[in-house]
Image 1 (cartoon, one colour):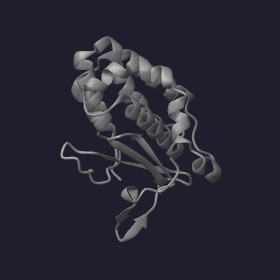
Image 2 (tube, one colour):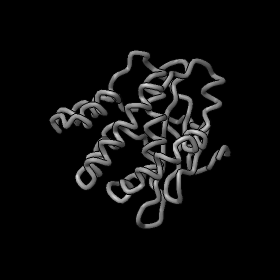
Image 3 (cartoon, one colour):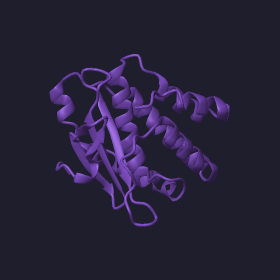
Image 4 (cartoon, helix red, strand yellow):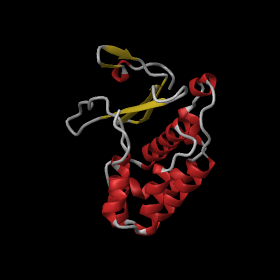
Length: 185
């Protein structure tokens, strides 16, 4: 979905922010990317979810702590499958390259990012029954957060450190402390 949905335009400090790309993840989640400001080709990620009341949430910025808590919730019921999911994310991390041009940033294809992972979505679908986020949303979000992190800093490590900590069973409080180090936008 490439059209700009009005629901994803937001104002911050009086400035109107229009997304570069908008993607309807499913019936209850819309995700958008915007031009960021932390580096030359930074992307800013925002999403909205349909609430239980049927209304849409405000435009939100996903944080590392959000998906970390969601993974922990999934791990409570499906430990082995969640560990496999984390290893899938570690492979994605290892293969993610930073954005090097405006053309690359403008050509991010959210649909293609998910189409490449149809097998993974099917394999890990059971995890969607626990936690707040669907597997489809988490895969897309993880890919974009990794792309964002590596674009802003080639030697980035936070996402990988959280993944490794979750996967190895590191102390819960240490993992959560690492996940909360991300700078708020």
